[in-house]
Length: 465
Image 1: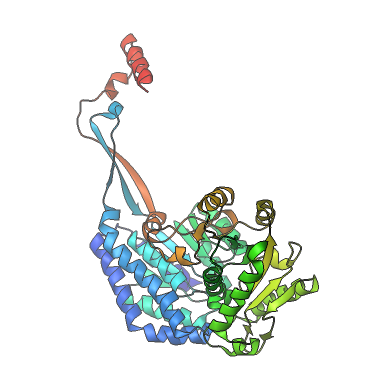
Image 2 (image 1 turned 90 degrees about the vertical axis):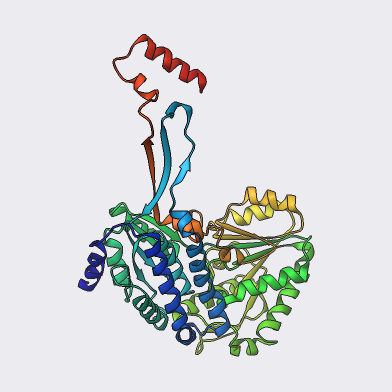
């Protein structure tokens, strides 16, 4: 692991706070490198995941370039000292907050959106003025090589460097004394990352998983809701951390919603399961392990009484699973106890809100929650009752694309926030400063030796509060 230590030590040599011009230059160089190698990324992601070109451009390239654009536009304002009010008791001073880099940052990225989830945190970390090591996923080797090439072209290694490798490299990196670690992946590995970070008292950003429910009531416009849900569920073959993991639909409209969902699925990916298995408009499962895991969840559900509404077929040779909808699903089934991360939608019907509470309290903390309803009061009640990291109302997925919004989870679905200003803050230390403006203020009147005047002054201050 000598090369890892060398990369780490190289970035330790100069930790002076970079200027706004330096940070903007880094971001501009990264933008140019992405543009120069964009077609190579399309090819790499097709080899790794079978992603269609359109998905690469929309869901990998666009979010990163949008993050760069947003950071460049607002960087000077973010870096400026943020004045705070001066209370009467501190007259003669001024106070402000100055965001400073945390120092050395480690970014560990997953395989499902390997370019976006590696480079978007990098953009936030660079905007905050840090030095960064990036560890892409070994499960998408072509894209990992592309990330290494782009970062190498854009930035000197003492600013940012990509480390290739597998589990051993990741484990070794997390043992090093970084000031901050940003990890995106499963909850189990997230716990290990947090434990490793604790050894060095490093702060962490954990973007994890969790089962993200979609709740639909009888007031919705059925066709519109079903179309958006079908797109969100089967994007990247369901390998999306904020994909609608399961559907809770009010019984009165359940048949109509499910039928419309199937209709839109067929419109997007083919009229029959055979057509859907050969469709190149969506990606395949990342590897044999995850393919078999999702198949196992389907088979377990069917063995316990679930039934297939559509799909339920697969091709082990291509690692493709036809978009699948399961009804008669119960909380006893394994598919309701772990994040599916595949193109399978379990459907549970509800008649009263107590049914929702029973299901939601039995499943892990969601990274996202989706409400489909025209009843604003009901949505407000659900928002107050059912917590999640992010939420969309009558939409899916879009909350992650809004750069003005912080993105992250709660408890088992994550810690911390990334994206936009929240990402800049996440990778910064907010340094608080109080500076004397005048030697004449009331504080010296409270210095020892204490007198009766001191007591009266203190009593007056306490009454004023």
